[in-house]
Amino acid sequence: MPTSSGTSKPTKASTTTTATQLIAGFQKHLANMQSITLASVAYSPAQITAALQLLVMLIASVDAAKAVVQAKLAAENAQAPALRTLMTAVVTYVKLTYSESPDVLADFGLQPKKARAVPTTEQKVVAVAKRKSTRSARGTTSKKAKLALKGNVVDVVLTPVSAPLPVVAPSAASNAPAPSNGTAASAPVSATSHGA
Image (cartoon, helix red, strand yellow):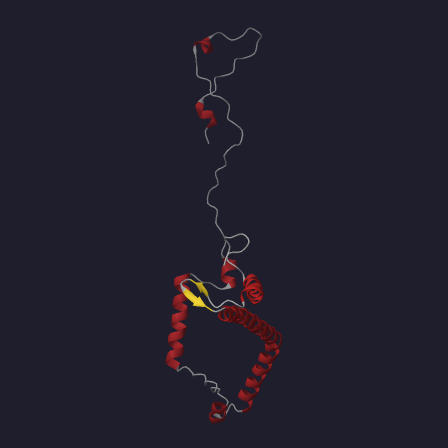
């Protein structure tokens, strides 16, 4: 059934409104007709009106059921946590009271607490050996052993941040006579003077 936009799917509210208006229109203008043919099927106005009323009733009953469900869900959400807590306390009480009576616990639908299996001496020895082997394989140590481990620095190489002085290659000018002002000429810098 197209809506005002002609493309979107009608909502239940719009369907109810349309059906109600069609019922009113049929009762006012088409109630005296003998039959109306729709999609090659003949209907009386009373049949069409009854069908539209059924559609309205179905939608209304679903909405009413949804409202009831919503109310029940709200009641459950409000009350269930406290009731579950009470049930847990009851289970604890019954288990403590009848811990030595498995038949009575079964009447409450509860299982008796399983007795803890005491390991044999052989099982204890095997467990200790297995734990030791696992710790060794994983390299697991105690807190004290971890604190005793220290790093050992063997050699540190420092790299200077500033650029080194440029190396001047000996040239013919270096064989020139010393200046006459009495200062001795400095020896050329060799590449070996900057070695590490």
